[in-house]
Length: 172
Image 1: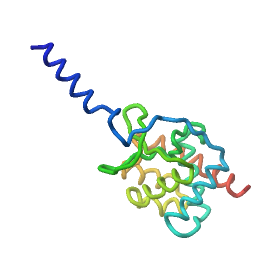
Image 2: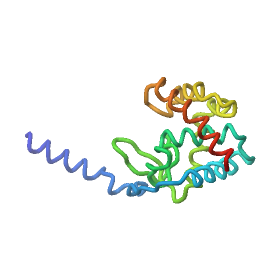
Image 3: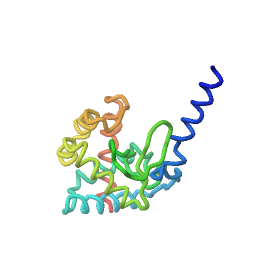
Image 4: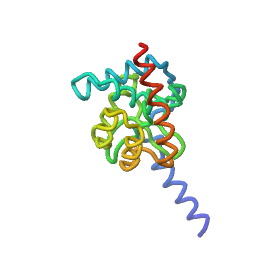
């Protein structure tokens, strides 16, 4: 009986595995420079909101992407901000650990996905991006389930990265 249960389990797992899922794609490392991130985030914002971002909003998004993607060094499939598909969303994705993340073909597509996610799921954080209030933005992002890290640590790091991101954008 135990062997039969194991065989049934193996058949079930193999019949529902990722190999047959038409939305899953291989995880591919796609690192980015700071300039590529800034350009993509700016262009993605314009695409989603139909206007240019203010300096604080752009800097906060750069700071968050720097936090989420190790300053552009750890990006897979052009996914900026480690955005996953929402429930029932039919989008290409890759798997990292136990988590699904959206896959994109370009950094601009990744930025559009990032801004669309913020607009749809974490819209309450956007006013704090504009105000340059990293700590409140961080806590609001957590309340929207954007990230699962401890709130105070995420807020502290985002708070330190924001002025550096703003300085980087202003130097450009």
